[in-house]
Length: 184
Image 1 (cartoon, helix red, strand yellow):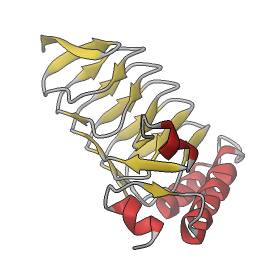
Image 2 (cartoon, one colour):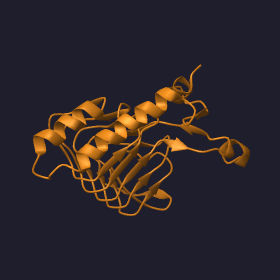
Image 3 (cartoon, helix red, strand yellow):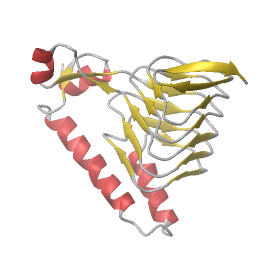
């Protein structure tokens, strides 16, 4: 099994020894570089790059520059998506956003994780778990979503939150670690 196959299947893998993964990351980084260095008024060119980069993306979307990702092909974005500046999606596993998503500045969605055992970390081993975001979700600024998290529909995640476990639908959630505070 290749390192890419291990990554896709949620197994421990080493992304730095697999030529295909290295090539895929370079392609994604080059597309992000082009995107981030376009004049802000070049909306059509920016949209062409994102449609080339992501697995799926709706017709209505805006991602403010700067934007960074690892591969792009594991990102699925629904209709009516908006992200403010400095969105980072580490998409070693699938990252799925539903419709009507609003993301504040400096947010990160990280599917990649590392073993707590230093010997495995020192070997370059990592793992990836999918992130799924429902419909009608708003993320305040500086939110971090960690591997394996599912966020339900119609939910608000407060600024500065670190989301380490699933958040249900129809709640306001905040904190570090992020917890549901009340129903909407």
